[in-house]
Amino acid sequence: MLKPHYPITTDRLRLRPFTPDDLDAVHAWESRPDVTRYLYWETRDRDTSRTLLDKKITRTALHDEGDALDLAITLRHTGTLIGSALLVWTSRQHRQGEIGYVLHPDHHGHGYAPEAAREMLRLGFADLGLHRITGRLDARNTASARVLEKLGMRHEATLIDNEIVKGEWSSEAVYAILETEWAA
Image 1: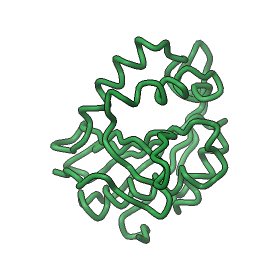
Image 2: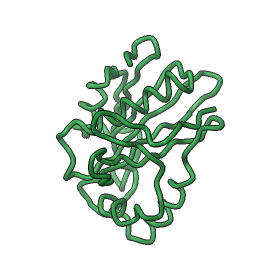
Image 3: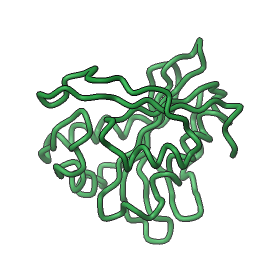
Image 4: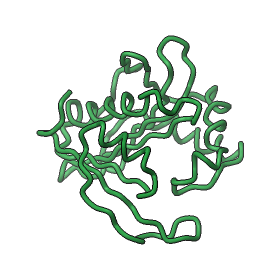
């Protein structure tokens, strides 16, 4: 089980649970086609963002496999909400998890995604005791692949045309890192 003490602070960021007041910021990135291009979901209207924000608000602890931490990424010095970071506990028996992240495009290219994702790895390995953490992405999403590589994750597979996403065949890249390879 994992229930972090919030906020989680890095050099430039704070990771914290989402609140109802985050709706405008969340919808600002969820409604953008350039954000959802490589994700499983389409752009979202405000009502859908609100419904899914209500779910994010509850995702603050990992009690058992299948649970997820879904945390708001904010700039440490201003409090501006710029994205979300995710850690899913995928297997208790095999001690495995998966990370994910989404940032508003205005904040791309500053190293915020790897900084936030590094904390999700730390939570998974150091606090939850996971053995292996993966990151899965649309194989065309080279920017996200670079984030995972910066974290020391290795490209393990590309599953060619393995899913139909948004009406077209999509290939999925799988990255992973083991606890023994992770450096805090």
